[in-house]
Length: 400
Length: 144
Image 1: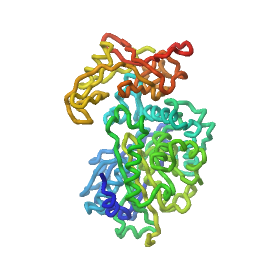
Image 2 (image 1 turned 120 degrees about the vertical axis):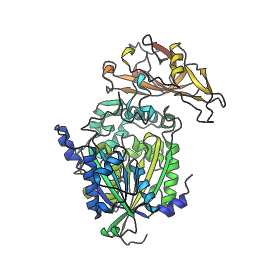
Image 3 (image 1 turned 135 degrees about the vertical axis):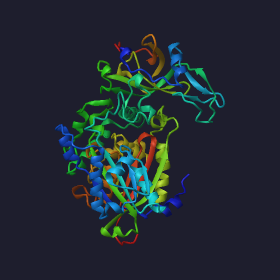
Image 4 (image 1 turned 90 degrees about the vertical axis):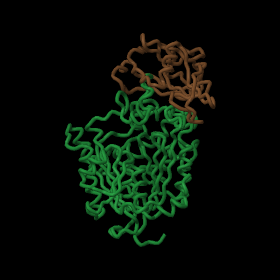
C-alpha cells in the first residue's frame, strides 16, 4: 500500500510542468482527409517536443531525462531528438508524468521531457477486428473473436449496457458528454471537431456497438504532444508568472479477472476508482469538491460517468441527473474535458489532457478558460488501471 | 447465422482442452485442485492460491444474461452479412462469466437476468463454438 505521507512529502508541490507543446490537430486532420501523408509518429513527436522546449525557455541540451509514449520506440525517438540522457522510460500519459516526477524528486534527472507521437489515422491503425491494435497486450481485445466480440468500444458498450440497466442511466443522459465536449471544442481552434452537437444529433446518430453511438467514440487522428518537467525550485520556473505543479497522484490496478472483464462488468472499476481516489486525495490534501475542472481519458463517453461516480463527484444512481444538469458543460460547476477531449479535440491517448490541464491552470485557455482555475484533476480508467493526478496552478511566489 | 464465417479461436496450450470439450458438446472449465477456484479463460495457474495444479470440471451450461450489445459496425469483412449481431455477457450458474452470442432470440427481447443454456454450434469438421439460447419460451417468433 502506498505511503501517502511519503508521497506527499516527496512530490506534492515539488515538481513543475514548465513547457507544453502540441501539433496542429485541426490542420493535420484536414490534410489527412485530403489524402496527404507528410509525417509520421516521429515527425509529430519532434514538432511537439520543439514547441514544448520553446515554451519552457530551455534548450535541447538541458534535457537529461526522457519518457516516450507507448506508440514510439524509445531509442529511435531519442536518436531523432538528439537526446543522450541519464534517465529514461516508456509509459502512457499519466504514468509518464508520474515517472518523470519520480526521476526529478529522486535526483536522477533535472529536466525531463515527456514525448508522444501517433500517426494512427494516416497509417490506418485498426482498433478491433483482425489484427486489433493492443491485442498483444490485452487478451480481452482478441480472445472473444470467435463470437465477433472485438474493439475496445465493444467492451465498453457491454459495460455501459449493464450500467444503464442497474443505475437507470439513459442514452439521453450519456449524450450530454458528447454534447458538452463539443461545446468546448467548438471554441478550441486546435480541435478537430469544431461543430456543436445537439442531443437530437447525438440520439439520431448511428450505433457502432449498441448502446454506444458514433459520437460516443473517440476520433482517430494524427498528432504529437510533449511536456517538460523540472523541480519547482529550478531557475527556469521563474520564466512564468503562473507555476503549475503536481499536487497529488494515485493509482490502483485491476488485473485479476481482466480477460473475463469481471471488474469492468460487475463493478464498473469502482474498487480501483475508490482506492486510487483515496491515495490521490490523501496525497493532495483535498477532495472532489476542491476540483475546478476535470480531464477524463475519454476513448468513449461512458468513461465520464464511471469516473464521476468512482471518484465521488456524484453517486451512480444520480449520475444521469448530474449530466443532464449541465454540470460538465462550459460554464457548468464541474467542466469536463475542457479542450474537447478525445471525443472532439484529438485522440492523443491522454497526453492532450495533461496539456489542457496545464493550460487551464496557466489561465491561458482563451474562450474555454474555466474561471480562476486552481486545481485540475485528471482521471484515466482504461484497460483496468485507474490513475489520477491533480495539478495545481498558482501565481509565482504566492504562498499556499 | 452462418457460423462458418466467424473468426476461429486462437487455441493455446491452456485452452485446448476447453475447445476439445466443446467439440464433445461439453462446457468445461479449469478447476484449481488446491482451492477449487474455477477459472475462465484458461490459464497456467490459480490466481487465488497460486497452485498450478488443475483439473477440468463440467459446467451445467445454464446461466443468466447480465449484459448485451449489438454490433452494427463491421469489424471483419466476413461478418458483413451477420451484422447486426448480438454479444452477451452470461453469468453461469457456477459464477463463471462467459461472453458469447445469443441465438434464437430477437435483440429487442433480451433482458437482464434472462435465463439461457449453452448450445453447441458444429461449425465444421474441426470446430464447435458454444453459444447460448433462452430457456424461456419466446414471446414472438424469431428468425435468428
